[in-house]
Amino acid sequence: MNRIEWSALDDAAKAQVLQRPVQAVSVTVRDAVSRIRAQVAAEGDAALRALTTQFDGVDLDSFEVSEAEFATAEAAVPASLRDAMREAAGRIEAFHRAGIAMPYAVETAPGLLCERIQRPIGRVGLYVPAGSAPLPSTALMLTIPAGLAGCRDIILCTPPRAGGQADPAVLVAARMTPGVRVFKLGGAQAIAAMAIGTESLPRCDKLFGPGNGYVDEAKRQVTQELGGPAIDMPAGPSEVLVIADAGADPAFVAADLLSQAEHGPDSQVLLLTDSPPLLDAVLAQLQAQLEVLPRAGIARVALGASRAVLVDTLETAFDISNSYAPEHLIIAVREPQAWVERILSAGSIFLGDWTPEALGDYCSGSNHVLPTGGAARGWSGLSVSSFQKAITVQTASREGIVNTGPCAATLAHAEGLQAHARAVELRLERARLEVAA
Image (cartoon, rainbow, N blue to C red; front, top):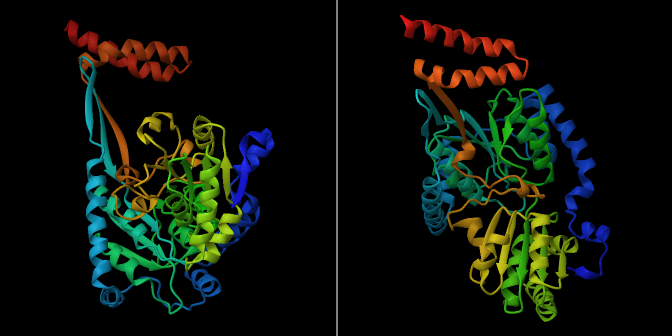
């Protein structure tokens, strides 16, 4: 992990420190994803079979998971894991149910009622990664709010394993929400299939879920197509930023950094601290803990593109964090709550020494599908509202048009839109005649 002294850097060097590693390969990724999209659009299921053979090393006759496969998966998952998933699902549902947006109505003028109502998105496509680490937790994070929102069709894609089967734990997690259809497809080709539609997969209205740089780029590209689906957010390689003071536990901080570094070689972790002894202790803990990690090889690659930054003050650390806009932000300082008001951009915040980011990944109840790559400056994490559309409704009576029509007509004339004005003025004239009568 690269050790940096922030005050010794010029502006260009500071910007370089905060650069995500995925940005360096964006051109290569963009071109590869574009070719995959074109192939799926032209060849449909045939392209999906060829790409699955190429990237996953398996030949599939059928992509959709059958009832027999679901039954086999249920039997293969240990009872302790099923119980843990049910426990997590309960907290996830409770948290997301509490946050469901409610419709409301306001009489903005006498005789004019404006409402906002919620409707579910009809068909949603969910992506659950399963490369080097299958993620049943992501299946829970996606399917539960989709079910609460009332989506008519829920399509879930997850990469097949070497034997051609989907990960059993992912299947069990997906089945905890009724009606979910699962397809054994991964990578950019899965995103293209859900966006375009093929003989096997129906076209989806909005796509959700995290993934590697190729999945993230595929989501960006399909949403830019004419008639393409919406997407939840930019959700690419995982990242965490830890702000720690001298009182933080070095072992805890190192463990939190490694919990994200082990996701993939393109993950990024940052440590910001105003304590040189704490920084040194964390670096030592990283080396010690790496020795016992099964995924140490992956974590070491990620750490090579990561930074341990010494700052003069904690205020500087929070300024850097707001500029970086991390997916996960851990505040390992004394009186962490006192700093929350200073945080402007982050996907999810974890306060204090006893709140590892891993709780949010699995079972605190909040969602772990979060904006990455700096997108937290303008995007929020997943919620039930992500799976719904808000529609406004307005109803004017004769009294309402009389009270508000002159305002609308004046504004329409000012903008040079005479037909707009006339649509209002005709009604005003009719209303006056009816009153006079």
